[in-house]
Image (cartoon, rainbow, N blue to C red; front, side, top):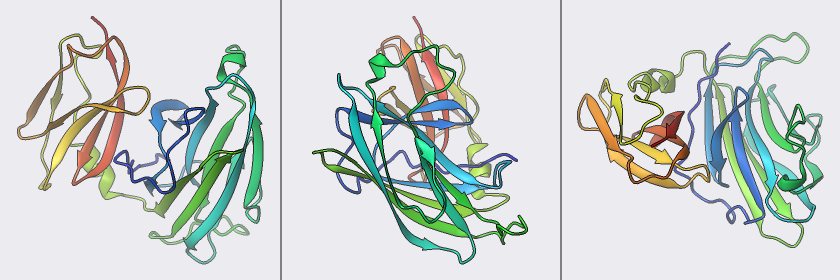
Length: 254
């Protein structure tokens, strides 16, 4: 079953920002959607084949030496009967709330490895663990994960999960076409079907998650000048009423 996500790239820092040495790169369906900073993220929609909603990142050490990072979970609220767990190098049972992992520098990791060895993922399980019966729509979880590099400032991510089979966000995401042409050299275009929203825009981010362009949507066609961007991979997001509801990859090549 397909997930529908509400991605909050307009971040509010919860406790510090990612250090220069440790950064986080989010993956959806095994594809990168760019770097993410500590803050609040909403994941609303249907479950995957494991009856879960999840948030998956690679934890990247940009330094020259291995570092030890701790991860501490704090459950703010959860619908009674639902489960949640996390993986941090290893996967842990629901009752575990603390783990640590020593992360080698990204420069020392063999690119031929079939998997990246240092991942974090948060998992929300809106089902009965005895019968695997899904709980009612609206089952939800709010949870915080705080990462601390030894001697560094804590970095906190807050996730709000809600199980829905037909989320509003999926309908909103359909209002924007895919970017064309892609790769783009001078201009990239989008077709838009406005659906009674108060405010909508398209933002473009670089691989570090930094916003480089934002343009309001005022018509059924949007054309954005990308000629000043350097060649490379970017990500564009549809932002509706100050919430990010769709993110895809954009390649700039001149």
